[in-house]
Image (cartoon, one colour):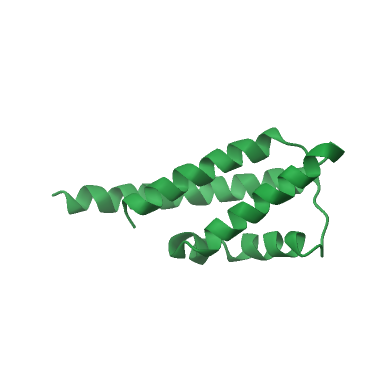
Length: 103
């Protein structure tokens, strides 16, 4: 963990902000929501720290992307909260590693 993860976490946080501003209850926004979730899914899968901590979320995202499930607004909000909390924990660990390396 380190600076690379810090940048990835910031980028994901921005995408979560965008996602939270959209609603699956607004038909015109559904494609934007799906595209953002697909982007987030791809970013998670290429980051070992995130990939290891989000296996359940990845399965949900993949099922949505593949059209196996539909997305309710409450579920989208739950996923955003879960990912945001995971990011907070990983961010804390990443900062700790950076600080310890400067000792």
